[in-house]
Length: 277
Length: 224
Image (cartoon, rainbow over all chains, first blue to last red; front, top):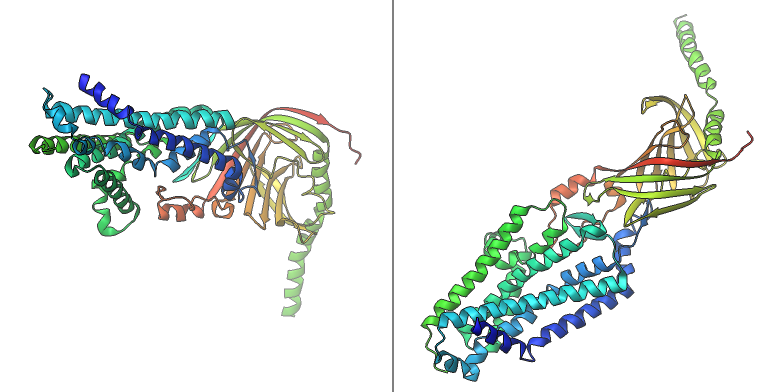
Protein backbone atom coordinates (compact mmCIF):
# COMPACT_ATOMS: atom_id res chain seq x y z
CA UNK A 1 0.00 0.00 0.00
CA UNK A 2 2.89 2.28 0.82
CA UNK A 3 4.45 1.60 -2.56
CA UNK A 4 1.19 2.39 -4.31
CA UNK A 5 0.91 5.67 -2.45
CA UNK A 6 4.47 6.52 -3.49
CA UNK A 7 3.75 5.64 -7.14
CA UNK A 8 0.62 7.76 -7.08
CA UNK A 9 2.55 10.61 -5.54
CA UNK A 10 5.15 10.32 -8.30
CA UNK A 11 2.50 10.41 -11.01
CA UNK A 12 0.54 13.34 -9.64
CA UNK A 13 3.65 15.24 -8.67
CA UNK A 14 4.81 15.47 -12.25
CA UNK A 15 3.75 18.34 -14.48
CA UNK A 16 3.47 15.98 -17.44
CA UNK A 17 0.58 14.21 -15.74
CA UNK A 18 -1.55 17.34 -15.93
CA UNK A 19 -1.13 17.71 -19.68
CA UNK A 20 -3.91 15.19 -20.07
CA UNK A 21 -6.26 17.07 -17.75
CA UNK A 22 -5.55 20.40 -19.41
CA UNK A 23 -5.94 18.87 -22.87
CA UNK A 24 -9.30 17.34 -21.88
CA UNK A 25 -10.50 20.65 -20.48
CA UNK A 26 -9.43 22.60 -23.57
CA UNK A 27 -10.92 20.02 -25.94
CA UNK A 28 -14.22 19.95 -24.02
CA UNK A 29 -14.41 23.74 -24.20
CA UNK A 30 -13.67 23.63 -27.94
CA UNK A 31 -16.40 21.03 -28.47
CA UNK A 32 -18.72 23.21 -26.39
CA UNK A 33 -18.06 26.19 -28.65
CA UNK A 34 -18.49 24.04 -31.74
CA UNK A 35 -21.74 22.65 -30.35
CA UNK A 36 -23.02 26.12 -29.61
CA UNK A 37 -22.16 27.66 -32.96
CA UNK A 38 -22.46 24.68 -35.29
CA UNK A 39 -24.80 22.36 -33.45
CA UNK A 40 -27.97 23.42 -35.20
CA UNK A 41 -26.45 23.11 -38.62
CA UNK A 42 -25.05 19.73 -37.71
CA UNK A 43 -28.41 18.37 -36.65
CA UNK A 44 -30.36 19.95 -39.43
CA UNK A 45 -28.45 17.60 -41.71
CA UNK A 46 -30.09 14.74 -39.85
CA UNK A 47 -33.50 16.28 -39.36
CA UNK A 48 -34.10 18.31 -42.53
CA UNK A 49 -35.61 15.43 -44.45
CA UNK A 50 -38.03 14.78 -41.65
CA UNK A 51 -39.17 18.37 -41.30
CA UNK A 52 -41.36 18.22 -44.40
CA UNK A 53 -43.73 15.81 -42.74
CA UNK A 54 -43.01 16.06 -39.04
CA UNK A 55 -42.96 18.77 -36.44
CA UNK A 56 -39.71 18.21 -34.58
CA UNK A 57 -40.60 19.22 -31.08
CA UNK A 58 -38.16 19.63 -28.26
CA UNK A 59 -34.53 20.50 -28.11
CA UNK A 60 -32.03 17.81 -28.97
CA UNK A 61 -29.13 20.22 -28.62
CA UNK A 62 -28.90 19.80 -24.88
CA UNK A 63 -26.38 18.88 -22.20
CA UNK A 64 -26.90 15.16 -22.63
CA UNK A 65 -26.22 15.37 -26.35
CA UNK A 66 -23.15 17.47 -25.64
CA UNK A 67 -21.79 14.99 -23.10
CA UNK A 68 -22.37 12.13 -25.54
CA UNK A 69 -20.61 14.01 -28.34
CA UNK A 70 -17.62 14.73 -26.08
CA UNK A 71 -17.40 11.05 -25.24
CA UNK A 72 -17.60 10.06 -28.89
CA UNK A 73 -15.12 12.60 -30.24
CA UNK A 74 -12.46 12.58 -27.55
CA UNK A 75 -12.24 8.82 -27.43
CA UNK A 76 -10.02 8.90 -30.48
CA UNK A 77 -7.48 11.17 -28.77
CA UNK A 78 -7.63 9.76 -25.29
CA UNK A 79 -5.10 6.95 -25.82
CA UNK A 80 -2.44 9.56 -26.60
CA UNK A 81 -3.10 11.38 -23.34
CA UNK A 82 -2.99 8.10 -21.42
CA UNK A 83 0.20 6.81 -23.05
CA UNK A 84 1.94 10.13 -22.39
CA UNK A 85 2.01 9.36 -18.67
CA UNK A 86 1.80 5.59 -18.37
CA UNK A 87 4.41 5.00 -21.07
CA UNK A 88 6.93 6.69 -18.84
CA UNK A 89 6.23 4.81 -15.62
CA UNK A 90 9.03 2.26 -15.84
CA UNK A 91 11.27 3.56 -18.62
CA UNK A 92 11.32 7.03 -17.07
CA UNK A 93 12.75 5.65 -13.87
CA UNK A 94 15.13 3.45 -15.79
CA UNK A 95 16.45 6.39 -17.79
CA UNK A 96 16.81 8.60 -14.71
CA UNK A 97 18.59 5.87 -12.79
CA UNK A 98 16.10 5.67 -9.93
CA UNK A 99 14.90 2.18 -10.82
CA UNK A 100 18.08 0.51 -9.57
CA UNK A 101 17.86 2.61 -6.45
CA UNK A 102 14.30 1.50 -5.71
CA UNK A 103 15.12 -2.15 -6.31
CA UNK A 104 18.06 -1.97 -3.94
CA UNK A 105 15.47 -1.40 -1.22
CA UNK A 106 13.42 -4.26 0.28
CA UNK A 107 10.80 -3.91 -2.47
CA UNK A 108 10.15 -6.94 -4.58
CA UNK A 109 9.82 -6.61 -8.33
CA UNK A 110 6.32 -8.01 -8.02
CA UNK A 111 5.31 -5.29 -5.58
CA UNK A 112 6.86 -2.58 -7.72
CA UNK A 113 5.23 -3.65 -10.98
CA UNK A 114 1.89 -4.21 -9.28
CA UNK A 115 2.03 -0.75 -7.71
CA UNK A 116 2.94 0.84 -11.03
CA UNK A 117 0.09 -0.91 -12.80
CA UNK A 118 -2.40 0.06 -10.15
CA UNK A 119 -1.15 3.64 -10.17
CA UNK A 120 -1.56 3.73 -13.96
CA UNK A 121 -5.14 2.49 -13.63
CA UNK A 122 -5.89 5.08 -10.95
CA UNK A 123 -4.48 7.81 -13.18
CA UNK A 124 -6.55 6.63 -16.15
CA UNK A 125 -9.68 6.48 -13.96
CA UNK A 126 -9.10 10.01 -12.71
CA UNK A 127 -8.62 11.31 -16.26
CA UNK A 128 -11.76 9.61 -17.56
CA UNK A 129 -13.84 10.73 -14.59
CA UNK A 130 -12.49 14.25 -14.98
CA UNK A 131 -13.73 14.24 -18.57
CA UNK A 132 -17.11 12.91 -17.40
CA UNK A 133 -17.54 15.56 -14.73
CA UNK A 134 -16.39 18.44 -16.94
CA UNK A 135 -18.48 17.47 -19.97
CA UNK A 136 -21.65 16.71 -18.02
CA UNK A 137 -21.34 19.78 -15.79
CA UNK A 138 -20.57 22.20 -18.62
CA UNK A 139 -23.17 20.57 -20.84
CA UNK A 140 -25.98 20.93 -18.29
CA UNK A 141 -24.81 24.42 -17.35
CA UNK A 142 -24.82 25.79 -20.89
CA UNK A 143 -27.41 23.66 -22.64
CA UNK A 144 -29.67 22.26 -19.95
CA UNK A 145 -30.98 18.75 -19.89
CA UNK A 146 -33.15 16.98 -22.46
CA UNK A 147 -33.72 13.84 -24.48
CA UNK A 148 -30.76 12.21 -26.14
CA UNK A 149 -30.76 11.34 -29.83
CA UNK A 150 -28.19 8.73 -30.77
CA UNK A 151 -27.77 7.30 -34.23
CA UNK A 152 -26.15 3.91 -33.84
CA UNK A 153 -27.54 1.07 -35.94
CA UNK A 154 -30.83 2.92 -35.65
CA UNK A 155 -32.21 6.23 -34.51
CA UNK A 156 -32.47 5.92 -30.73
CA UNK A 157 -34.16 8.55 -28.65
CA UNK A 158 -33.78 8.32 -24.90
CA UNK A 159 -35.90 10.14 -22.35
CA UNK A 160 -34.07 12.75 -20.32
CA UNK A 161 -34.29 10.67 -17.14
CA UNK A 162 -32.91 7.64 -18.94
CA UNK A 163 -29.62 9.21 -20.02
CA UNK A 164 -27.39 9.89 -17.03
CA UNK A 165 -26.96 6.25 -16.03
CA UNK A 166 -26.07 5.42 -19.63
CA UNK A 167 -23.45 8.16 -19.73
CA UNK A 168 -21.93 7.09 -16.42
CA UNK A 169 -21.92 3.42 -17.46
CA UNK A 170 -20.22 4.37 -20.71
CA UNK A 171 -17.56 6.30 -18.83
CA UNK A 172 -17.00 3.41 -16.42
CA UNK A 173 -16.59 1.09 -19.39
CA UNK A 174 -14.27 3.69 -20.84
CA UNK A 175 -12.03 3.35 -17.80
CA UNK A 176 -11.63 -0.30 -18.74
CA UNK A 177 -10.89 0.58 -22.37
CA UNK A 178 -8.29 3.18 -21.52
CA UNK A 179 -6.96 0.95 -18.74
CA UNK A 180 -6.11 -1.61 -21.43
CA UNK A 181 -4.13 0.98 -23.34
CA UNK A 182 -2.41 2.06 -20.14
CA UNK A 183 -1.49 -1.58 -19.43
CA UNK A 184 -0.04 -1.91 -22.94
CA UNK A 185 2.02 1.25 -22.53
CA UNK A 186 3.38 0.14 -19.12
CA UNK A 187 4.41 -3.17 -20.70
CA UNK A 188 6.14 -1.37 -23.56
CA UNK A 189 7.71 0.97 -21.06
CA UNK A 190 9.28 -2.02 -19.32
CA UNK A 191 10.37 -3.68 -22.55
CA UNK A 192 11.80 -0.67 -24.42
CA UNK A 193 13.37 1.07 -21.44
CA UNK A 194 12.84 4.29 -23.37
CA UNK A 195 9.86 6.60 -22.62
CA UNK A 196 9.56 8.07 -26.10
CA UNK A 197 9.73 4.65 -27.71
CA UNK A 198 7.11 3.31 -25.30
CA UNK A 199 4.71 6.22 -25.87
CA UNK A 200 5.11 6.23 -29.65
CA UNK A 201 4.85 2.49 -30.01
CA UNK A 202 1.70 2.44 -27.85
CA UNK A 203 0.11 5.07 -30.06
CA UNK A 204 1.26 3.33 -33.23
CA UNK A 205 -0.11 -0.02 -32.10
CA UNK A 206 -3.46 1.50 -31.12
CA UNK A 207 -3.75 3.33 -34.45
CA UNK A 208 -2.85 0.29 -36.55
CA UNK A 209 -5.11 -2.08 -34.63
CA UNK A 210 -7.96 0.43 -34.72
CA UNK A 211 -7.58 0.70 -38.50
CA UNK A 212 -7.69 -3.07 -38.80
CA UNK A 213 -10.85 -3.11 -36.69
CA UNK A 214 -12.49 -0.60 -39.05
CA UNK A 215 -12.08 -2.34 -42.36
CA UNK A 216 -14.22 -5.23 -43.51
CA UNK A 217 -11.50 -7.24 -45.26
CA UNK A 218 -12.05 -11.02 -45.14
CA UNK A 219 -8.61 -12.11 -43.94
CA UNK A 220 -8.46 -9.28 -41.42
CA UNK A 221 -11.89 -10.22 -40.09
CA UNK A 222 -10.33 -13.43 -38.78
CA UNK A 223 -8.00 -11.57 -36.45
CA UNK A 224 -10.36 -8.78 -35.40
CA UNK A 225 -11.82 -10.72 -32.45
CA UNK A 226 -8.27 -11.09 -31.11
CA UNK A 227 -7.60 -7.34 -31.08
CA UNK A 228 -8.41 -5.41 -27.93
CA UNK A 229 -9.19 -2.33 -30.06
CA UNK A 230 -12.25 -4.20 -31.37
CA UNK A 231 -13.74 -3.87 -27.89
CA UNK A 232 -12.64 -0.44 -26.68
CA UNK A 233 -15.68 1.21 -28.30
CA UNK A 234 -18.17 -1.17 -26.76
CA UNK A 235 -19.31 1.58 -24.40
CA UNK A 236 -21.62 2.52 -27.25
CA UNK A 237 -23.78 -0.48 -26.43
CA UNK A 238 -25.13 1.52 -23.50
CA UNK A 239 -26.81 3.77 -26.05
CA UNK A 240 -29.11 1.24 -27.66
CA UNK A 241 -32.38 -0.18 -26.47
CA UNK A 242 -32.34 -3.84 -25.51
CA UNK A 243 -28.66 -4.02 -24.71
CA UNK A 244 -27.20 -7.45 -25.03
CA UNK A 245 -25.84 -7.77 -21.52
CA UNK A 246 -23.90 -10.91 -22.39
CA UNK A 247 -22.02 -9.12 -25.15
CA UNK A 248 -21.24 -6.24 -22.82
CA UNK A 249 -19.96 -8.63 -20.17
CA UNK A 250 -17.97 -10.52 -22.77
CA UNK A 251 -16.31 -7.32 -23.99
CA UNK A 252 -15.56 -6.23 -20.43
CA UNK A 253 -13.92 -9.55 -19.66
CA UNK A 254 -11.88 -9.44 -22.84
CA UNK A 255 -10.50 -6.02 -21.90
CA UNK A 256 -9.87 -7.17 -18.34
CA UNK A 257 -8.12 -10.22 -19.74
CA UNK A 258 -5.86 -7.96 -21.80
CA UNK A 259 -5.04 -5.81 -18.76
CA UNK A 260 -4.14 -8.87 -16.73
CA UNK A 261 -2.26 -10.32 -19.68
CA UNK A 262 -0.13 -7.20 -20.14
CA UNK A 263 0.46 -7.10 -16.39
CA UNK A 264 1.67 -10.71 -16.31
CA UNK A 265 3.87 -10.19 -19.37
CA UNK A 266 5.40 -7.12 -17.76
CA UNK A 267 5.96 -9.02 -14.54
CA UNK A 268 7.61 -11.98 -16.27
CA UNK A 269 9.82 -9.70 -18.34
CA UNK A 270 10.75 -7.44 -15.45
CA UNK A 271 11.58 -10.28 -13.11
CA UNK A 272 14.07 -11.67 -15.61
CA UNK A 273 15.49 -8.35 -16.67
CA UNK A 274 18.91 -7.27 -15.57
CA UNK A 275 18.58 -3.80 -14.10
CA UNK A 276 21.83 -2.10 -15.02
CA UNK A 277 20.74 1.51 -14.78
CA UNK B 1 -80.12 -8.00 -85.66
CA UNK B 2 -77.41 -9.45 -83.54
CA UNK B 3 -75.79 -6.02 -83.39
CA UNK B 4 -79.06 -4.44 -82.20
CA UNK B 5 -79.37 -7.05 -79.43
CA UNK B 6 -75.76 -6.38 -78.37
CA UNK B 7 -76.20 -2.60 -78.23
CA UNK B 8 -79.49 -2.91 -76.37
CA UNK B 9 -77.91 -5.26 -73.79
CA UNK B 10 -75.01 -2.88 -73.34
CA UNK B 11 -77.33 0.06 -72.74
CA UNK B 12 -79.46 -1.94 -70.31
CA UNK B 13 -76.34 -2.70 -68.24
CA UNK B 14 -74.83 0.79 -68.48
CA UNK B 15 -77.99 2.81 -67.74
CA UNK B 16 -78.48 1.68 -64.09
CA UNK B 17 -74.79 2.20 -63.41
CA UNK B 18 -74.98 5.79 -64.63
CA UNK B 19 -78.01 6.37 -62.43
CA UNK B 20 -76.11 5.02 -59.40
CA UNK B 21 -73.16 7.29 -60.18
CA UNK B 22 -75.40 10.29 -60.56
CA UNK B 23 -77.06 9.50 -57.20
CA UNK B 24 -73.87 10.46 -55.34
CA UNK B 25 -73.67 14.22 -55.20
CA UNK B 26 -69.99 14.51 -54.41
CA UNK B 27 -70.21 18.22 -53.72
CA UNK B 28 -72.84 17.54 -51.09
CA UNK B 29 -70.69 14.79 -49.52
CA UNK B 30 -67.63 17.01 -49.33
CA UNK B 31 -69.61 19.98 -48.06
CA UNK B 32 -71.29 17.87 -45.37
CA UNK B 33 -67.96 16.65 -44.18
CA UNK B 34 -66.34 20.05 -44.36
CA UNK B 35 -69.20 21.73 -42.56
CA UNK B 36 -68.69 19.49 -39.53
CA UNK B 37 -65.06 20.42 -39.38
CA UNK B 38 -65.77 24.11 -39.77
CA UNK B 39 -67.95 23.87 -36.68
CA UNK B 40 -64.81 23.40 -34.62
CA UNK B 41 -63.53 26.81 -33.68
CA UNK B 42 -60.84 25.48 -31.40
CA UNK B 43 -59.88 22.41 -29.45
CA UNK B 44 -57.31 21.15 -27.03
CA UNK B 45 -56.57 17.51 -26.45
CA UNK B 46 -54.08 15.25 -24.70
CA UNK B 47 -52.18 13.15 -27.18
CA UNK B 48 -50.03 10.08 -26.82
CA UNK B 49 -47.60 9.36 -29.64
CA UNK B 50 -46.37 5.87 -30.37
CA UNK B 51 -43.78 5.48 -33.07
CA UNK B 52 -43.61 2.23 -35.01
CA UNK B 53 -40.79 2.76 -37.49
CA UNK B 54 -38.02 0.37 -38.30
CA UNK B 55 -34.69 1.89 -37.35
CA UNK B 56 -36.32 4.31 -34.93
CA UNK B 57 -36.51 3.44 -31.24
CA UNK B 58 -38.41 5.99 -29.25
CA UNK B 59 -40.46 5.68 -26.06
CA UNK B 60 -44.13 6.75 -26.10
CA UNK B 61 -44.48 10.47 -25.70
CA UNK B 62 -47.31 12.68 -24.53
CA UNK B 63 -48.23 16.17 -25.62
CA UNK B 64 -51.03 18.68 -25.38
CA UNK B 65 -52.36 19.91 -28.71
CA UNK B 66 -54.16 23.23 -29.08
CA UNK B 67 -55.86 24.08 -32.33
CA UNK B 68 -57.38 27.43 -33.26
CA UNK B 69 -59.29 27.77 -36.52
CA UNK B 70 -58.46 28.24 -39.30
CA UNK B 71 -55.10 26.51 -39.03
CA UNK B 72 -53.13 27.53 -35.95
CA UNK B 73 -51.66 24.51 -34.23
CA UNK B 74 -49.71 24.61 -30.99
CA UNK B 75 -48.15 21.51 -29.49
CA UNK B 76 -46.72 21.47 -26.00
CA UNK B 77 -44.60 18.52 -25.04
CA UNK B 78 -41.70 17.55 -22.90
CA UNK B 79 -38.67 16.17 -24.61
CA UNK B 80 -37.96 15.45 -28.23
CA UNK B 81 -40.81 14.29 -30.45
CA UNK B 82 -41.53 13.66 -34.10
CA UNK B 83 -45.12 14.74 -34.65
CA UNK B 84 -46.75 14.13 -38.05
CA UNK B 85 -47.88 17.35 -39.66
CA UNK B 86 -50.75 15.79 -41.56
CA UNK B 87 -53.97 14.93 -39.85
CA UNK B 88 -53.82 17.06 -36.72
CA UNK B 89 -55.64 19.96 -38.33
CA UNK B 90 -59.23 19.37 -39.50
CA UNK B 91 -59.17 18.65 -43.25
CA UNK B 92 -61.18 21.69 -44.25
CA UNK B 93 -58.69 22.74 -46.93
CA UNK B 94 -58.40 19.25 -48.36
CA UNK B 95 -62.18 19.06 -48.82
CA UNK B 96 -62.48 22.49 -50.39
CA UNK B 97 -63.66 22.32 -54.01
CA UNK B 98 -62.15 25.74 -54.62
CA UNK B 99 -58.76 24.13 -54.11
CA UNK B 100 -59.36 20.70 -55.56
CA UNK B 101 -61.15 18.93 -58.38
CA UNK B 102 -63.10 16.00 -56.94
CA UNK B 103 -63.90 12.70 -58.66
CA UNK B 104 -66.08 10.07 -57.08
CA UNK B 105 -64.59 6.60 -57.51
CA UNK B 106 -67.00 4.35 -55.69
CA UNK B 107 -67.33 2.87 -52.23
CA UNK B 108 -65.12 0.95 -49.86
CA UNK B 109 -65.30 -0.20 -46.25
CA UNK B 110 -62.62 1.45 -44.12
CA UNK B 111 -62.31 0.78 -40.38
CA UNK B 112 -65.63 -1.10 -40.58
CA UNK B 113 -67.41 1.91 -42.04
CA UNK B 114 -68.78 2.10 -45.60
CA UNK B 115 -67.14 5.11 -47.22
CA UNK B 116 -67.29 7.21 -50.36
CA UNK B 117 -63.98 7.24 -52.19
CA UNK B 118 -63.18 10.66 -53.58
CA UNK B 119 -60.09 11.49 -55.61
CA UNK B 120 -58.92 15.05 -55.03
CA UNK B 121 -56.73 16.71 -57.64
CA UNK B 122 -55.19 20.04 -56.61
CA UNK B 123 -56.02 23.01 -58.80
CA UNK B 124 -52.75 24.66 -57.82
CA UNK B 125 -49.83 23.13 -59.72
CA UNK B 126 -47.45 24.27 -56.99
CA UNK B 127 -49.29 22.31 -54.32
CA UNK B 128 -47.06 20.03 -52.22
CA UNK B 129 -49.68 17.35 -52.64
CA UNK B 130 -49.73 15.88 -56.12
CA UNK B 131 -52.85 13.81 -55.66
CA UNK B 132 -54.98 12.70 -52.74
CA UNK B 133 -57.78 10.29 -52.02
CA UNK B 134 -60.29 10.73 -49.24
CA UNK B 135 -62.59 8.12 -47.79
CA UNK B 136 -65.67 9.75 -46.24
CA UNK B 137 -68.03 7.71 -44.11
CA UNK B 138 -71.49 7.29 -45.59
CA UNK B 139 -73.03 7.28 -42.11
CA UNK B 140 -71.69 10.44 -40.55
CA UNK B 141 -69.61 12.14 -43.31
CA UNK B 142 -66.50 12.02 -41.19
CA UNK B 143 -63.18 11.35 -42.90
CA UNK B 144 -62.04 7.78 -42.30
CA UNK B 145 -58.90 7.86 -44.37
CA UNK B 146 -56.83 10.34 -46.27
CA UNK B 147 -54.13 9.27 -48.67
CA UNK B 148 -51.85 11.91 -50.12
CA UNK B 149 -49.07 11.54 -52.64
CA UNK B 150 -46.63 14.34 -51.88
CA UNK B 151 -43.77 15.70 -53.97
CA UNK B 152 -41.10 15.29 -51.31
CA UNK B 153 -42.18 12.49 -49.06
CA UNK B 154 -44.03 10.11 -51.32
CA UNK B 155 -47.18 8.37 -50.28
CA UNK B 156 -48.72 9.11 -46.89
CA UNK B 157 -51.85 7.50 -45.48
CA UNK B 158 -53.70 8.90 -42.49
CA UNK B 159 -56.42 6.79 -40.85
CA UNK B 160 -58.93 8.36 -38.47
CA UNK B 161 -60.93 6.55 -35.82
CA UNK B 162 -63.73 8.20 -33.91
CA UNK B 163 -65.32 7.68 -30.54
CA UNK B 164 -68.55 9.66 -30.73
CA UNK B 165 -67.05 13.06 -31.48
CA UNK B 166 -66.47 14.78 -34.79
CA UNK B 167 -62.76 14.88 -33.98
CA UNK B 168 -60.79 11.63 -34.07
CA UNK B 169 -59.86 9.59 -31.01
CA UNK B 170 -57.03 7.94 -32.90
CA UNK B 171 -54.94 8.94 -35.89
CA UNK B 172 -52.64 6.48 -37.62
CA UNK B 173 -50.06 8.09 -39.84
CA UNK B 174 -48.40 5.66 -42.29
CA UNK B 175 -45.58 6.30 -44.72
CA UNK B 176 -42.81 4.52 -46.59
CA UNK B 177 -39.54 4.69 -44.74
CA UNK B 178 -37.44 5.21 -47.88
CA UNK B 179 -39.50 8.26 -48.81
CA UNK B 180 -38.76 9.86 -45.46
CA UNK B 181 -34.99 9.66 -45.98
CA UNK B 182 -34.26 8.80 -42.38
CA UNK B 183 -30.49 9.18 -42.46
CA UNK B 184 -29.29 6.02 -40.83
CA UNK B 185 -26.80 5.48 -43.63
CA UNK B 186 -24.67 8.50 -42.98
CA UNK B 187 -22.77 7.72 -39.84
CA UNK B 188 -19.33 7.20 -38.62
CA UNK B 189 -17.15 4.24 -38.50
CA UNK B 190 -18.52 2.82 -35.28
CA UNK B 191 -21.92 2.28 -36.78
CA UNK B 192 -22.59 -1.32 -37.55
CA UNK B 193 -25.36 -1.54 -40.07
CA UNK B 194 -26.59 -4.73 -41.55
CA UNK B 195 -26.86 -3.49 -45.12
CA UNK B 196 -29.30 -6.18 -46.17
CA UNK B 197 -31.52 -5.42 -43.22
CA UNK B 198 -31.33 -1.71 -44.02
CA UNK B 199 -32.16 -2.33 -47.66
CA UNK B 200 -35.12 -4.52 -46.73
CA UNK B 201 -36.46 -2.02 -44.26
CA UNK B 202 -36.31 0.80 -46.79
CA UNK B 203 -39.35 -0.60 -48.58
CA UNK B 204 -41.34 -1.00 -45.41
CA UNK B 205 -43.91 1.21 -43.85
CA UNK B 206 -43.49 3.28 -40.78
CA UNK B 207 -46.39 4.28 -38.58
CA UNK B 208 -47.06 6.86 -35.94
CA UNK B 209 -50.09 6.23 -33.73
CA UNK B 210 -51.65 9.23 -32.06
CA UNK B 211 -54.17 8.54 -29.29
CA UNK B 212 -56.29 11.55 -28.45
CA UNK B 213 -58.09 11.89 -25.12
CA UNK B 214 -59.91 14.50 -23.07
CA UNK B 215 -60.96 16.81 -25.82
CA UNK B 216 -62.06 20.31 -24.96
CA UNK B 217 -63.84 21.53 -28.07
CA UNK B 218 -65.24 24.96 -28.72
CA UNK B 219 -67.81 25.01 -31.51
CA UNK B 220 -68.70 27.90 -33.72
CA UNK B 221 -72.04 28.49 -35.48
CA UNK B 222 -71.53 28.07 -39.20
CA UNK B 223 -74.39 28.82 -41.65
CA UNK B 224 -74.87 26.20 -44.31
